[in-house]
Length: 587
Image (tube, rainbow, N blue to C red):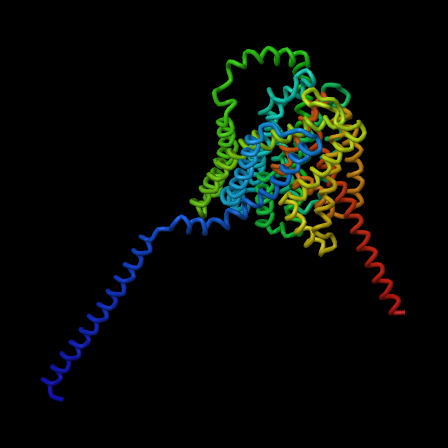
């Protein structure tokens, strides 16, 4: 090929190549343009209302139904009992119905916000804290977190509200603890929870036995109880002190402190035991009791019953003009919800940013969860005030009409004395059993125990054992109020029996039994039972209506320990029979 031909051929090749590049570029540009137009179409496309409903309905309905299953059966049971057995109509039914709806909605939002907003904090801090700071700093954070979660616990509001129902003349020390010392009371409870988180975390780190912690915490609790029994006025605070142990183990405290404790233990390489997570709830139930008993002794040393009564009567008139505009309005719940959640979030944020120097993994989702937490707490508190607590107090105040004359109930007593007492006990038993079986946390515990014991302790056996114990405890609490029994005379022998059973049981069953008392006292059970007890106490002129929750806590401990010993006996008997069979075949 000569040179001119080569040049023409080269030009032709370049021309063809250039043309192909232009065609390829044009194709690429057309494809990109088509993709952009398609993207714009997608962006311009808006979801219809029905599409949003189809996306969110399964997500919301599952959580809404979960709360309905807890609240609705209890509400229906209380209403039917009041109308069919006591022949009394429910007063202000519309307000109570709206309040119950607010309880369900608020609890649904709060639990969802807890999982999306607060739980990631606990998990992130728990996993990263041990690697970046020293152990004393880790324990200090755990201690402060224990205090913070106590203020954020929904049921703590029911405890504070109980002070307004109490008559100062009946129990001066108890009255001043719930009114003048209410903030200090919650702080003391928080300090107890904080100490429990510290010791529980150390226990997870070093695999210490829970038995020794139980012995070490119950000894001072029972000793202080015996000391307070010597004073007629101080003995009236025992119900509050022991009930505080039940109030602390709710939907905020349990998951957050467990996430922190297990995270710390796992990050240290020592939290791999199947029992990881057990024990912190138990200690968080016991330490606040000691704290409140010590506070009661301090109050008794600082003032006298006469001074409390005089100050209360003098303050009733002066305080009436100083009541803030929001005190008797839903705005009170709004402020309480903000005060409960916001400081806890600020503390967790400081730990995350200052100590760990970590960023939030999903800040938008966490912010969304925190907003849901605050909103849910507010709605739940409003519903609690106007719905669940009102219904429980109403049922409790009318329950006495079954066996004694009540001023505002015509034809009371409705039944002969012995039959009426029996009806009251059956009512309390069914209420306790039903509320416990419906508790979601108990089902989760049942799955854990079933796995832990390789099916020897079945899930349904645990649920029924716990429910039976709670039911017996609440029934015993009703008897305590009706007959004005001394709470210490009931608690001390029951806890002594629990200590004996603890000594006889293995570590696995001890962990399960003592933690089962914590999972039964949820945000629904605590306010309902507390309101019912206080309403019944006022109706029968009892000194105070506390103590039912404490008895509802010791009940499942005893029943689960006894069931555990029975399971141990069955397993041991089965193994012995298998050994004898093997020996017989070998012979």
